[in-house]
Amino acid sequence: MQGLVFTYRKKRTRRSEKLREKAPEIKKALAKWGAVMFFSAALAGGLLCGCLTAGGLKPDTLKNLDFFFTTNLPDRLSGGALNAFTASFGSGFLFLLSAFLLGLSLWGAAAMPFVAFFKGYGVGVSAGYLLMTYGLKGLVFYLTALLPGIVVFSMALIYELGSAYHMYRKILKSLFSKACGSFFKDALREYSRRSLRYLAASLAAALIDTALWACLAGLFF
Image: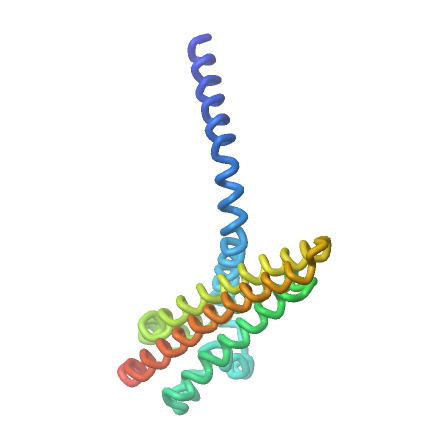
């Protein structure tokens, strides 16, 4: 019995030692990817809520949300590929612009999770709307024509929010730094470069949406 207790304690000691050794790596990973993981969770939470509440939304509400999300398919179909591109890129641009500006605000960090949540909510509402309105055909259309562009843009938005959060922390740090001007200038330059890359990813997502919409919409509706 004493041998078993000794062995158990020895294993616990080894595990604690391994955790201590990995602690710096874990902290480093959380510092680098923690914000991205957090905003991904917020988007996933919005996605779940959107799927669950899509059936309770009124037709007028769905119509008003169509600029941000695909909730009024007849109007989208009548507008053609150009309308699909305008709606996709315009919506993405507004989300990225909101995230970019929040990164420059001292109160922006409090609103960043809601941007990710609202995007996820819209994705869930779109999926729920298509499934309830068109059944299996709507679900297949969503998976084949809409989901690829949504995945590309969602990744761009999550990384933009992560970059915005780190920029927000740099602003706070610069307030207590003697070299405030040069520090903020370099950080803002890097932040702008990253945001332009994510905007390019949003443009790519809109082009994917448009191409798939033009090729597949006629096959389903």
